[in-house]
Length: 210
Ligand SMILES: [Zn+2]
Image (tube, rainbow, N blue to C red; front, side, top):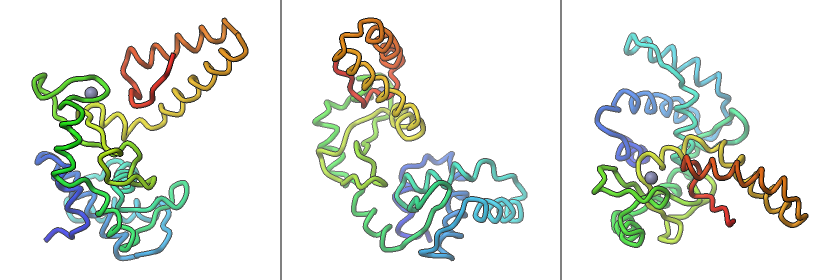
């Protein structure tokens, strides 16, 4: 029996990801045994690695990544750097912020059944997913306006390469400042950097108005 709050995660996973899912379940097991307590990474990681070894005989690689994933999925609250907590009330609220099937259909229809970053769709063999523009763990709601259609690749990129976002935003700000100061050279430099972002379709959800 899978706990209700984990069902949303399970749905997102493919069948070949069952081992990864079991690892996430294992991590959750620890947090659920210690609800509403701020827990540092090492405490959970050490337990999970030992427990996984005991149960499966295998090595649990990168449990830190699993913890981040659980936080992104709204199952854990990030309290500080490397500190997370499980709060059953919070999770119940988070579940409300998942899109319903009807909402997903409406969002995909609005976006023309194409990824809003690369424009690819099922006819190009890509899987479409509906993403929260403002993430759930930052208070993003399950509204049509807060939804966007992404292909699996760009959804993955958005979730896993957040650190590149501040880079793009930085160069956009610098570009604007250079433009205001009529600093042609700096403006040119920023334009070139931003064009590299666009050419590689990195952080396409951040719009740079030239
Ligand atoms: Zn895409």
